[in-house]
Length: 432
Image (cartoon, rainbow, N blue to C red; front, side, top):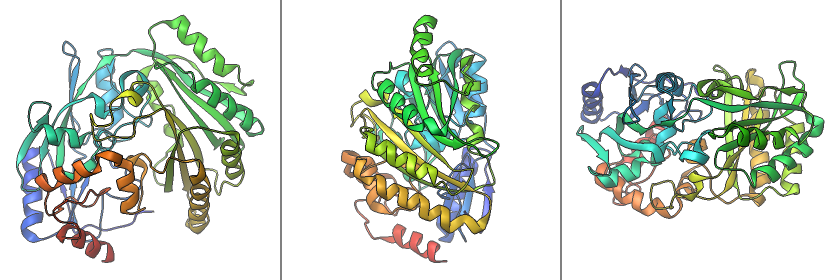
C-alpha cells in the first residue's frame, strides 16, 4: 500500500548518528521520517523527498536479571527482545506479533498478552534516551525531564527520536496459551461465549477472538488465549471454560514458553501484502454488534483479511488516565479490522469493505481508538485517542518541538504553532 521514495536513508548506528541526521535535515530544510521496527501499516516511516532516519541496525538488548530490567535499542523487534529476556525467565508486555518494533508499540501505548497482569508496554517503561528537534540528547524518566517521560508513554514520535528504552521486567517463563479453532458456522456461539467469559476474566488471562480463513481458504472462527498465572490448576480451569464454549476443530492450547506465544499469530501478518486497518474501541459486545461483525466476516474481500477483537482489561485498564499519556483506561474491546490482500486489483474492494464495516460499527463504539491502529483519518481521531490528555501533550510538544519538525506521525500539534511551519511542511511533502 505504501510506495514512496525518500531523498536519502540514514542508517544510524548510535545516538551520535541520530543527532547528526536530525541536524542535517533541519539545516537543509528537508522533512524527516523515522523508521524503527518497520511495522507501520499507516506508512508513517517513509515519505517522498524526505530524509528517512533508519534505526533498524540498532537492535541490541541488554538484560539485568538482578534488577529485572532490560535496556533495548530502538530498532529491536519484540522477537529480539523476548529471546534475550526469556533466557533469564523474564518478560514485559510486548504486543502479539513478534515482528513488531518495540519503539512504535511502546510509544503508542503497547497492548499485549501480559497487559492484564502487568499493564501496557508504556506502563513498564522506566526511562528513555531521546534526541530532540534541536539535536539535544536527553534522558526521560520520573526523575529527569518528567514531563517528557509522561508524554513519551503513548505520545508517539512527536517529541523526538527515542534511541534506547529501559523496561521493567517480570518473572514469566511458561504460559498456558494457544489457539482454539472453530468452523465459521459457530461464529455467533463462539463470539457470545468470548464476550461472556472475558467479562469475568482474571488479570492473568488475555483473550482475543478472530474471524479468519484457514490455509485452504475455509472460513474459521478462532480464540487466541494467554494465561500468565502462577497457579497451573487455576489457569487450566479458566482456559477450560473457553474450551467449553463449543467443540473446536483444532485445539492448539497448552503450556508453552512465552516467546512461542508471542509468535503464534505471526502467520496473520505476513510481510509483502497490501494492508489497510480500521479500528474502534467498544465498551460492550451486544448481540447486534456480534451479528454485524459476523455479517461483514461473511463478505470478507480476501482470504488474508482478519477481524480481531482484543480484550483490554486488568491492570492496563486500572491505571489513572492522567498517569501516562494513554488516557483510555477502561475495560473494553478493540475491534481491529485488518484488510490484507495480494492482488492490487482488489485494492478498492478491500478499502470500501473496511471503511463500510468501520462506519457500521460506529453506533457501538466509544468514539475513540488505540492510536497505534490509526491510519490517515485526520486530526480529530488523533485528538480523541488522547482524550483528556491532549491539551497537556500539546504544551509538551511546544516545549520540545515548537516547529513541529516531528510531524510524520499521529501528529500532536504544538499549542504555540497550530497551522504553522510544521503542518505546512507535512502538507507540502504529502502533495509532492
